[in-house]
Structures are given as structure tokens and as C-alpha cells.
Figure (tube, rainbow, N blue to C red):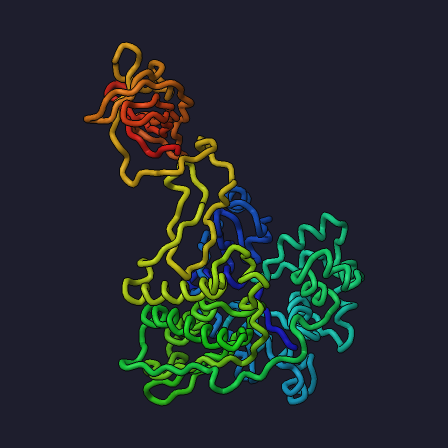
Amino acid sequence: MLVVWCPDWPAVAAVAAARGVLTRPAAVFLANRVVACTAVARSRNVRRGMRRREAESRCPDLAVFGVDEARDARLFETVALAVEELVVGLEVVRPGLLAVPVTGAAGYFGGEPQLAEKLVDQVSAAAGVECQVGVAEGLFAATLAARHGALIEPGRAAEFLAPLPITELDQPGAERAELVDLLTRLGLRTLGSFAALGERDVVARFGRTGVLAHRLAKGLSDRPPLRRRPPPELSLSESFDPVLSRVDVAAFLAKKLGARFHATLAGRGLACTRLGIYATTETGEQLGRVWRCAEPLTPQGVADRVRWQFEGWLRAAPGERPTSGVARLRLEPEETVEGRSLQLGLWRGGDPGAGPGEDEELTTERAGRAFVRIQGLLGPEGVVTPLLDGGRDPASRVRLIPWGDPREPATPPDATWPARLPAPSPPTVLDQPLPVQVVDGQGCPIGLTPRKQLTAPPHGFRIAGGPPRPITGWAGPWPITSSRRSTGPPQARLQLLLASSAEDDAAEAVLVLCSGTDNPVWTVEGSYD
């Protein structure tokens, strides 16, 4: 396997999309942490995982960009086209990394070193970016060989991998961070030390994820050598009238196509690991690309790759984009494996309490298809799911994410937030805060001092139009702070324990917000059940 790797691709693509030059330091951030940076930024001590504030303090003129997978995939199409001029059968692993079979092309160009040199020159001339080439047995070893610019002879992959750090197992998209952390704490610091373990011991201690990582550390293929040959009826074809000429329309249709494609494979107990995307334009042009995936594709994974590929085709530079819209699209499962995610447990998907015929996995799959259909009627925002995110108050900690979109927190929920409300959070958070009155023992309204302290202990609580209720306990105040200078009134939150009312014998706890000094405004934001 020959791998072409473009270093720092997210940062390179971001600079190119902004029509900048790579001589200026730039970095891509996610949740205020560096996920990629250019070589110029690294020369000024900017590193992956670094917080934004620290990165900007080390490099004041750092250009800041956000993560955009569609942008990365669209611009990487230029690199793929450049490589495709020399070799055929390439597979895009992810934006910034592609793989090609090496045997035939190496023989044509006179050997692997000659082929690697021609590919580097071709990508530099046609796409204007730098790349590195590596050759080894298996995609994992070839990827690391590309990072080192090495051509590994057959049978020497394990020897090449042995001294490399164990952190190399946590490649983008592999989601092995927990496994790598555990192996490091157990004293296994290199791939060779992990590969030396017996396979039975690895199975007993680390499970399936550990076995797959163990194979990679030993220089073996990440997939079994024998795979099912996809039946021809598993491909999905779709014609469009009018033709597709807009990326947003293609992105909308990609979700439905991805769900149908995945459901067809799931019905046969299969999952796709190499997806071929082929299109025919209105004028007869033939377009095609194969995407290789580390893990079996989900419906959202299929939709993402279709959307990324359409962006690469429809937004390519003049002369490289098709001359007309796409009239026909075909999704081809180039390679399939056993759909382990569809294999149910002995007790109805692992749930002994499930009712007759209530298979958990199948029920989840049917619900997902129903959600996709509803989105087709109401739009992507018609079906949303809650996600706990970082924030100072309960309302801001919950984000609603459209069904099918990645459920990734923008900020870790357990991150440190100044003036954050302590646990527990109120189970009920009101959409519209409820105005109330809070008074002291003399019946006078309570407000805040300029230092955000209460002017008197709270004694009485009353909702407009309701009976007064004594306050039997309270906690706070927790001042609301901001990183920016504010000229508004001081604000703080309190937790109040209310005595039982005539209608309800149970006591009640509420979260309230106080704003202002002379004419304070009190509102209820949530309640504790």
C-alpha cells in the first residue's frame, strides 16, 4: 500500500480557502484547542492540543480558523485529481490522506522510489501543496511510513513499527484514546512492547478494540484478508430531474441516500468499509471516487462522504469542475465486512427486560429511519436531540443537535467555568423565566449591592397573582461574571427552599436570578423536583 499524506491539511485547507499564504502562522481550533497548525506556527512553539490563549500568547499574529470537514474534503479533491493523473484506483481515507495500490504503478515507473518522487512533484505542481509518501504492508503501517517519508520493504513492517510510541494507535477517526491511555498507564510505551503480548491475553484484557490495535502494532492488516464480495444488487442508483448543481441540495439528498444504502446492507448483515461514489453529469461526464473507512460506515458516515464528494466536484476550480449538473448517482459498496453492529445479544439486544419481539437494535434502526423521513418533511432542524455541553447556567449547558449530525460537545461538560452554578442542576429549566418577588423580613424588596451581594437575607417569595410563601433556606448568591466589561446591572443566582403551600404539602426548591440594585428584578429559571 502506498499512502500520500499532506501534513497539517486542515490548516493548509483553511488558509487556502481564505486565500491566504502559508508563510503566515495559522491554526485550526476546536473547543478552543489546536487541532492542526501550519509549519510556520509550529516553528513558533504552537502545538496540537494547546489552548487558544496560550497559542496566541506564543504567536500573536496567529491566524485562527474553525474546523470545517466539508472545506477540507472539497479542497483535497485537487490533490486526489493530481495523484490520479499518475496512478489509478486511489482511495481517499480522509481529507489529507489517500492510499493507492503500489504494485502496478511502481512497476510502470521503475520502482517505488521513482513513483514516490513523481507523486511528490506532481502534487506540488498541480495542487500547490507539499506531501509525503510512504509504502508499507497495510494501511496503518503505510500511514506511519508516510509521516516518516519511509519506504518499508515487504516483511519489515513490524520492525519499523516497534520503536514508535504507543500514541500512534490513536489515529484520527480511530477513537482509541482510552485504550492508548490505559496501555500507557500499564507501562506499554511503544508499539513493539504491545505487539509482544500474547493474543489471548489481549483478548481477555482489552476486548475487540484491543485485538484490532494489537494486529496493527504487529504490522498486520487492520482487516481480515478474506472479505465478502458485494452482490451487484447492493449498489444504490438514483437519477435526478432536475439535475443536481447545488451543494445544499446534494447535502439534503445525501442523508436520505445514506440511510437507504445502509439499510440495504444491514438487511443482509453487512457493513461497508470502502464506498464508491460514481456520478454521471447531464452532458455525459463520468465522475468517481472511492472512500476507505477505518470503521464500518454508519448512515451519517455515508451521507457525509457523499456530501464532501459533491462539494469537491461542484466547487472545484474552473476547468476541473463538471460542465453540467449531476444527473445520476451510484453508491457502490466496494468492500463489505460482517455488520457486527447489527449482531444482537442473546437477550434481545442485551436487554433481558425487553418485551416480546422488542429487539433493541432493530427498534433503534427503525426509529432512525423514521427520524430521517420526518426530516425530509420538516427539514434538518425538525428532529433534534439534546446534548450536555459546557456552560455556566443550566440553560446554556444543553444544545439541541439535528438528528444525524455529529454529537460532539463544543466544550467539555466537566471543564472549569468561572462562576459556574454548583451541582445539582435543576431538572426543570423554564423556556421563559417566571417573574417573582423576593422580600426580606420587613416585606421590602431585596436587591444586589455593587459587589453582587444581597442587601438583606431572603424571607418571603411570591409569584405574581399567587399567595406568599416563606423561604426556609437559601444558598448563594453566585455572581454572573463575564470576560468583557459590562455596564449593565449586577446579576446573581440563588437557590431558594420554599415552605409548602396550602395547595401542596411538599416543600419546593427553585433557582432564581436577581438583577439590579435599586429596582431589582427577580425571575425563576428552574425548579428542583
